[in-house]
Length: 224
Ligand SMILES: [Fe+2]
Ligand SMILES: [Fe+2]
Image (tube, rainbow, N blue to C red; front, side, top):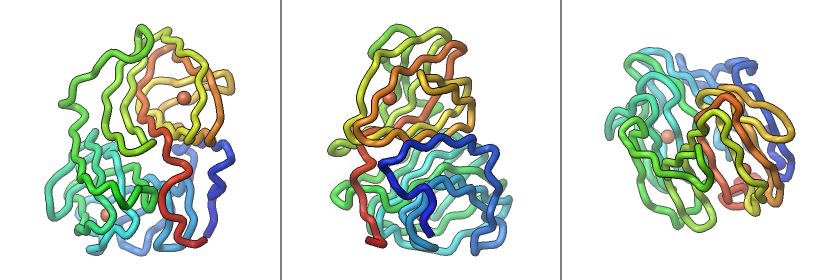
């Protein structure tokens, strides 16, 4: 399956408008954002676990990265409540489940195999640091090579400068409304801005976004 698999294309999706599609596991459904492959795929998805649902034990051949959007995700290593950011490096394995149900934003097979750091950050307990312009606050989550992941909080009326994404940029709007010269993006919007693209973002009403940059030309393309 190829779904929005050409990373040179800009993509904007209101993820709330996508249908939930059953996964092979009972109680586990997903909204596919991008996908290159079948059950083993380079993929970005929003995955919903019903209460008391279990996913099969598996090894992350290409790494796994996720942000818990609601509820609590769990595996044999611990519990990850809403707001937790997790990176399971290439070669790691676990057995995920959820007691009370949860929704996560998850990326598979898009991690540098040399990046072997397991990351677990409860963002609700982490400090924000001032960003590059007034009104902007940043919570760095991870950096490896050209890849950068952070939460960014925009106070109402914050205007950022025009900038270029050499390695692309991906944004998920967690709260509020994010905007740039091409549109406005409410909570649940997912954007993928291709390598070498530019934009001038702002937020009239304020927002909190998950941002990942410098990664769209790395990772393993398992079907090529
Ligand atoms: Fe996993
Ligand atoms: Fe940007």
